[in-house]
Amino acid sequence: MTNRKFQYSFNDLDVKISDVESLLGYNETSEREMIQSLIEEAIQEAAGYCSIRAEYRIFKNVILDDRNKAIFINDVKFDVQKIIFNQMKKSESMAVYVSTAGAGIGERSREIMMGGDPLKGYILDIIGSLTVDAASDLMQSDLAASLGQSGIKITNRFSPGHCGWSVADQHKLFMLMPDNFCGISLTGSALMEPIKSTSGFIGIGEHVKYNNYICSYCDMKECAYRELKDRNQ
Amino acid sequence: MNEILGKIALCIEFGKINKVSPYPPNMKDQDGADELTRQALDAGVKPDEILENALVPAMAKVGEKFSRKEIYVPQMLMAAKAMNSAMVHLKPFFQSGETKRKGKFIVGTVAGDLHDIGKNLVAMMIEGGGWEVIDLGVDVGTDKFLKALDANPGAVIGLSALLTTTMENMKQTVTAIKEKHKDSKILVGGAPVTMEYCQKIGADFYSPDPQGAVNYLKALVS
Image 1 (cartoon, rainbow over the protein chains, first blue to last red):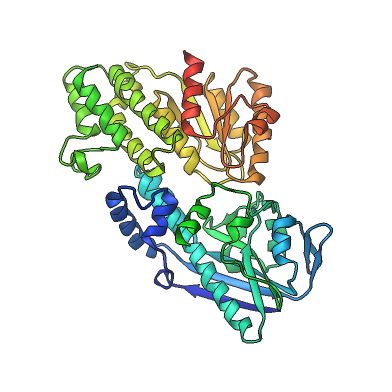
Image 2 (image 1 turned 135 degrees about the vertical axis):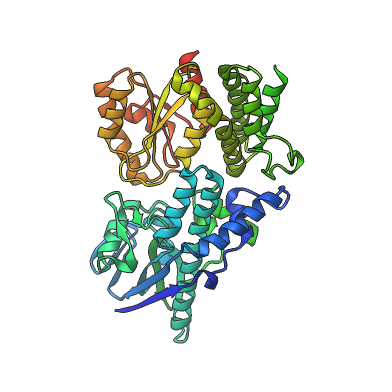
């Protein structure tokens, strides 16, 4: 089993003002002067509250059950459902990953929100989410680069909660990891703490494919992340 | 409507908090909801007139614009902040009993769930609708809801959940509340919640946006 750990500084990540604007609902034609200065200020503040880590483990003991659209890793069954299964079905091994922006950014967001500045708190919350995504992107790039030398490819990232995959499977995903993996723990309701964390699978194999536009496979047509990706296409 | 009440309403609708607030740019250097509310009270306008004829209609407009997707969360939050700056001046009158609110609304994110932005938005809009909001926070177990309801009989309850896993905890809380306080009204909301789910678990109302919740409460007391 291969595993790699990463620690990033906020400046390693490319959290853009325009991405925060998009998740806030703004577009090119919106009046954005005021919000841009608030976002800029919040991005600067966020840097001091993030403790960004990511980690992946590669599992070779993987069985893909086409009939039930399930993936078995080390004999643990994941009911990933049709959309994700189809993206993963040519995988020969699987990277299980987690990444986190740390507890500080979520706590600061809530503190500001409760302190009477809900807008700034909300902007910090969004920056926390984008930070986790950006850290996951860097971790995934490292995985792609390390495997690419031997001609092995990877799929997109998929997490419990995506495309019909039950969030409850997060418990099984964490069973594959040592306790406190990347400093993340799981609540009884499958919520990760720190809250600005993400986890999931990346398929690995000679014949798997990375799709630049994965949103077209998803059922959620009005998702803010889809709007963001559409804008960046 | 009294001219100053119109001005307060406008400040709240467009998120003009106070004089130093640079937003919105076309109201720069003008008094905001904070100063105007103080001036209205000093001029003898009754606090309940300010609530009913400025805050409530302004927040209703904000909620309607949000429902129609004419504004987004940031503008709604700016409006809520402006409303809060006016509310600071009115709160002493609520506390003394001189001004009555429409009722009490107990709100919380259900057990196991730590998400609170949607719940906070609903709480702000309902407060702006003239209700006293008792916010129990996040990860709120059934017992805490029951105790809050025991302490505030007749209050309307709002339950929020963002995850499919925690949404299941709504059912347990709704069942327990209805067993103990069968006439209680319960609103549910959150990303995975639907009207069908609301009916299935025995809750009274579901709204996909905050204004729907405000309108439901308004109908309850009208």
